[in-house]
Image 1 (cartoon, rainbow, N blue to C red):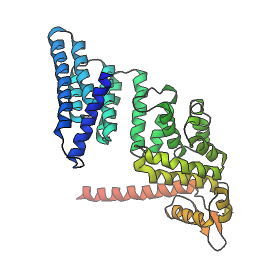
Image 2 (cartoon, rainbow, N blue to C red):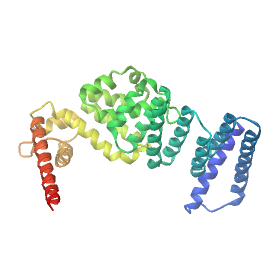
Image 3 (spheres, rainbow, N blue to C red):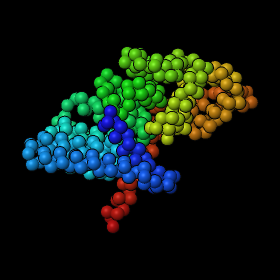
Length: 351
């Protein structure tokens, strides 16, 4: 209890110092000085343990003493000193598994401060360590860290793939609970997988079915999408928006994600028709004709939906692109580009 209380005080100090630096609060030394004294006291004890281990104990004890100091800096949210001390601890570390654990601590700091450069370098370092040897438990943990990084940087397709690979082996509770992990897995899969894959990997997945009912709105949204119940889907969608807005990793991508979900939903509905009236579509979604007209016009203009609106007749006409023809056109375009480059190169060589 004493340790927990002291950690909270130290974190509180870091928050106060940040607010003072941003001119939100005024400096009150009568409050801050006792907390700083407590931090100095704890650091003195940790330094004494390190000195004792170096003088009287073995290499493993020295490493553990340095690791304890690293974890202390992490607990009080002192990023720079924590990273410095983690490097010192790494220099005292031989086993690959223990080095991996230090990388995980670095990644946790990166996610705390949303330092994507630090996270990216940490993930690359972890992958290099695995080439030297590493156990499957840590490798599976890394998938969740990398998946969270991909989701936080708007690479939802790769995030979904990594999360789905980790469903049955999830142990990364230091990042978030299993319910939150399933929440992220379902959200990223909805906009990344085709209908058949979504059914196999998400809708019917026993690990997801065991948890999804505990997460508000997500079960209704997923099942309504798969069952083409668009009216109930929009109701669940409205509830999900608040959860996504409040999520620290998804909040920066809120508008983008909302657009991608609507693209998936509208595309799925239109896939069944060569033409359909706007009124029929509005009725299926439980919204007004004006709303559907405005929505679809935006997505069509952005190239997200392959259809056109006959405003006079009030009809939507789909014009799905021919995949073979699109591949042919892309090949011709790339061939022309390559020939132009070769011609420019030949002129340089001739000179």
